[in-house]
Length: 581
Image 1: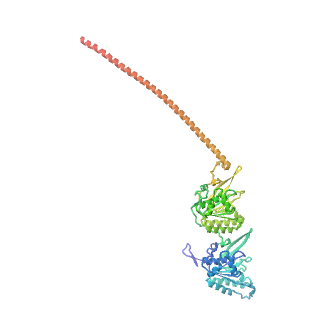
Image 2: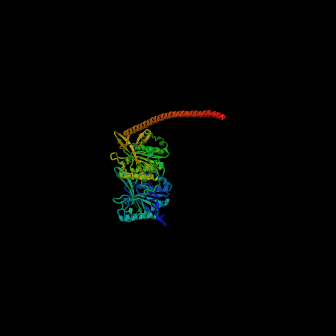
Image 3: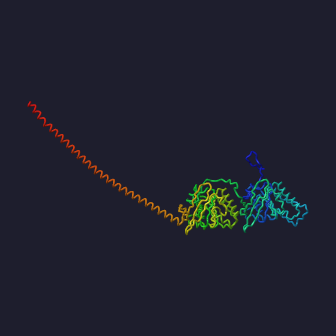
C-alpha cells in the first residue's frame, strides 16, 4: 500500500494504482486503475471498449515499462493489429520487444456441450502461460460475453465469473475486462459489475444528428474518483477524455500585463492592459468590429515575439489576413515566422468535444502565450447551451492552468440587446468583459465600446465611440451633449458648436484685451498730459520763485547800499562839530 501524508502525524495508506497513460482518464480516476485488480469497461457497440483496452496496454509498455497480454475472443491478432495501426500503435513491434503478447482464443459455442461442469481451466492455463512468458503486469480480456454468452446455467456462470476475477487478483495483474451493455444492466450477465473493483461505463449517443461519447466511472473500490459524465474522443492519437480541469481553482496567476493591441483601449484599464493568463470576453452585435479587435490583440502578441493560436469559425485564414490588412493589421509576417497559427473550420465540422481535443492538441504542440476563439457563439450550432457552457468551462480552466491569455468573441442578439448575459453563459467565468455595440443616431450608425468588468484592476466606466480606420481601431474622445454622450454627426455638430463657442470666447477675450490696451494708452496719455501740465506749473512756480528771490535780493542789496550811504554822510558832520569845539 502507498502512504499519503496528512496534516496529522499519522500516514493514511492509499490504494496502489496503475496509470493508464490515456489523456484525462488518470485525472478522473486520480491516478489510474486499481493496481493488481480487475477493471470492467462496459458499453454498447462502437464506443471504443477494445481500443481503450489496447491503449492501456500500449501506454503501459511504452511509458511505464509494464508488459501486457491481450487475449481476444472475437478478433484475430491480425485484425486487431490492422485496426489500431491508424492510431499509431505498432503491435508487432511491441511483440518483438517482448512488451506485448496478443492471443486469440476461438470459442465456438456450437461445439461446446454444457454438462454443468463447464469451467475455465483451459483459459487459466493459456493466460497464465502468456503472462509468465513476458512477465506481464497488465492484461486485457476482450470480450467476456464470448466466454459466457452461450451458457444459460446462471449458477455456473456466476461461479466461473467469480473464479475468473479471483484468479486474476491472485495473479497480481492489472486487468481490463470489456463487456457489452445489457438491457437495463451494465453488462449482459448483470454480475461482472459487482465483482469488479472498478467499473467504467462508455456511452455512445446521438443527439440532434451529432454523435457524442461519454465516460462515467460507476464505482471504484478504495478510492475517490470523478463521478460526472465526461466526454471523450477517439482520434488519430487514441482516446482523449476531457474532464473539467482545475475544479479546486488552485492554478497560479501572473501580475504581468498584456496589451490589447489598441493603445487607447489599454488606457481604459487601471494596469494598462490585461493580466497574463486571464480570460477576456468580447461581445457585440454583428458588424461591431469584434474580429478586428481580436486580430489587433493577436497582432500585438506576435509583435512581442510570442506565439498566438487563432481559431476562426467564420473566415478562412486567407480571408482573415486580407480583411485585416485593409485596416492596417498585417498578419502575414507573423504567420510566416510561426508566431501566429490560424486554425479555421466551420463549427459543424466536429462535435464540441472534437473541437476541445483539437484545441488541447494544438496548445500542447505550439505552446502559445495567447489563444483567440472567434466566435464562440457559433458553437451553439453543434450543441445545446448547457453542452457549450460545459465545454467552454473546461476550455477556460485548461487555458488558465497553462497561464495562457484567452480572448473569446461572442455574438449577442441585437433584438434583446443582452448586456448582462451571453447565450453561452460564460460572462461570469471570464475575468474581463468588453462590450461593443451600435450607437444609433439620427440617420446613422456608430460603434461604441465599454468595459463591463475587469477582475483585479480598476477600469473606465465610459462608453467610448471608436472608428475603424486604415491604421486600425481608433477610440475617440468622449463628447458630452445636453442629453449625454453624442456620436457621429451629432458629435461633429457638437464639436463645431464647441469650436464656435471657443472661437467666440477667444474673440471676446481678444476684444477685452484690446479695450484694456486702449484704456491703458488713454490713461497713459492722460498721465502724460498731467505730467506735462504739472511740469509747466512747476516751471512757472520755479520762475516766480526765482523772480521773487531776485527781487528780494535786489531789494536787500539796495537797502543795504542805502544804509551804507547814509552812514557815510553822517560821519563828516561829527568831525566838523568836534573841530569847532
